[in-house]
Length: 165
Image 1 (cartoon, rainbow, N blue to C red):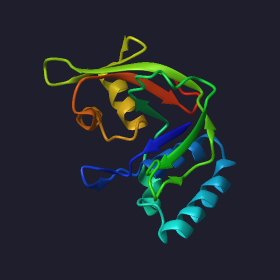
Image 2 (tube, one colour):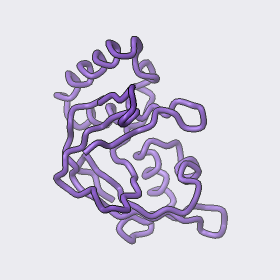
Image 3 (cartoon, one colour):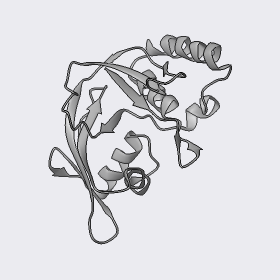
Image 4 (spheres, helix red, strand yellow):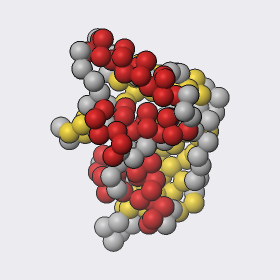
């Protein structure tokens, strides 16, 4: 199933493609060849490299993603096809198909003191764990993560690596 990613948040590049690839190449050196194959396809289609290709060494890997999934479509074992501009004229698959390794429940709420509480499978993450969670999802910190969703949120955490919380 297609898993769509945006490339911009608040008019700024989010470097999600590059962060996802960093996570994939960290898991397997064999993915590096695939990285260059998909980068070449992007160059041929759009005439340019990915937004942050020159910054990759400074980016933290994105190793999972969050989705609302109100129709309960995502399950372990499903094929993940990562795309940008899903179903649009510029749709582009930017990575080889992957397998959904696992699903975890996620809930994010404000804690009443201006902070954010993140629960994974009903376990409250500590502040340092919450920060690492936000980074692992492609954000700078928990505040940026929460601001992206703009409200309290409940959904699924989709894993394409073996990492769990």
